[in-house]
Length: 366
Image (cartoon, rainbow, N blue to C red; front, side):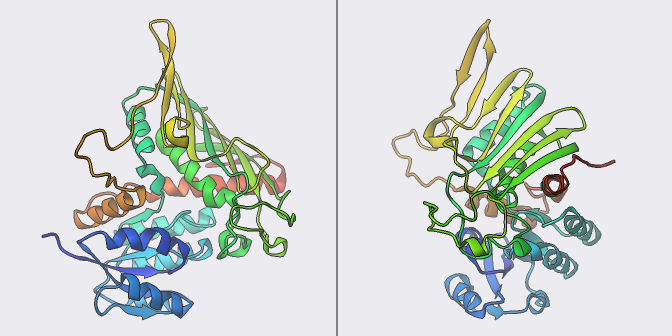
């Protein structure tokens, strides 16, 4: 039997309940022994549903960090507090899984990376879309060199009318932005990871709040309150890398478009190209190129089944993320999502916001 990893949850809101705690509960070598939230009732509810026997409830995360039995902390708070909670947890001797994005700013993310290096503790960021079947297949193709040199890519995070109206999603102070930092971050992480290119040179950005003041919204989660809508409704970035490769990032919660694609990437290389607009409404992969002087399109079958006795219990990306993270802790392996990768995502997102404010390109790593 592997040893039991004892975990503290800081932030018991939507993402903790929707992803982290349900996935952790499925792992036999995990016990959630502490729950913290500034709204005590949330922590109490989480403790009842997911807590091990004797689990404790806190409203001050600093008190949770004093518990020596806690080996791992999951930071599931609004973006504003990702950095300082993570830094404190690392210095308290805990390994940290922080929900995406790494931080609101590059400076905050640097503090997290420095704390991980100083303490020798593991730090990872919650980019679970890397664990989808289409992402795994496409990454394998990229690593095998099937696409050749990837010099142009698109990162897609476009919703037509799906603005999250709960929690603090519309609060610029708490989150640092809207769809760009919320879902654009996933698409950019996927794209950089596929390209294995983390050296951005220059960023130009456009940020729009054109629809946030509307009242009849046809929004997927009900009409938003224009008075509380303090973030953008769409944002776009043009990113050039040090080697000349170019990425176009598109993100929106509300946009008058039918080209709706989220947490997807399009890659164009010297040998072949690929995208995630295959079968099953974007869950597939298409690889295109030329063979024997003819154009081709390949669509692999990514379904987990295909045999008579298959029981249909495919592992979700959230469950796989949690399992691999805990495995990295137990066996002292590098986590799937490395903080030195996630920090580049934050750096680029911040540069898009900055470029949009100034109307000028932002040059990085000068």
